[in-house]
Image (tube, rainbow, N blue to C red; front, side):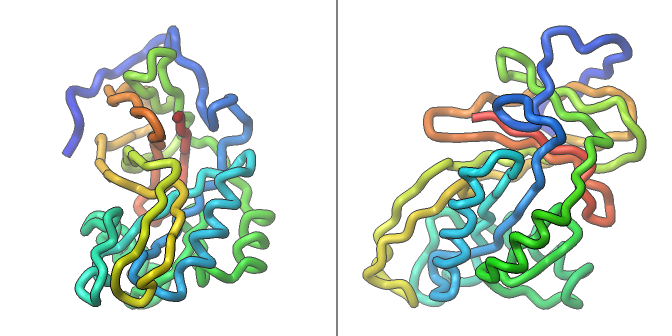
Length: 229
């Protein structure tokens, strides 16, 4: 559901700063999505890799915690049906509908085992992100502008916790202390983008949080991305 009203703009977007990252890096960041769970014993190495990527410039790593592991002994506090649904949507393109953890998706177009460091880093080196749909946050961080540009897609708002430490009390990782980076707390569709310039209101991130805005085509390809924290 879209948040608030959508304002069309036809002139210069005064007061907005391009936000490929906090420092306005260019080109825009490579989007890396990890589908993971604290209930999965194979996931901690992938979580550690995501945390490493979070320290890199030019990368936007996001940890989507799925909820289908929750019934097996431990309820992941970051898990959500929205994250599972997002993985299922990718599975239609990549794996014939099959889902698994840990899985990493790079730029919405390539998938691999999330703990396969060599393949993940290779995919990052080969990625050529383009800002078909430029993303810019306002200086007060209460709105985001998309475009103008070519093409069309869906504008998605991702709210994430930059760091979280959890003592796992049950399940496959019982007794372990897990550290998650950029764990997604909420995923919201802001609206559609049709190539014209648009502005969407957003709530700025709170302490220890970040927000990312993704513009994604129907085939999964990332057309634009930016984040602040």
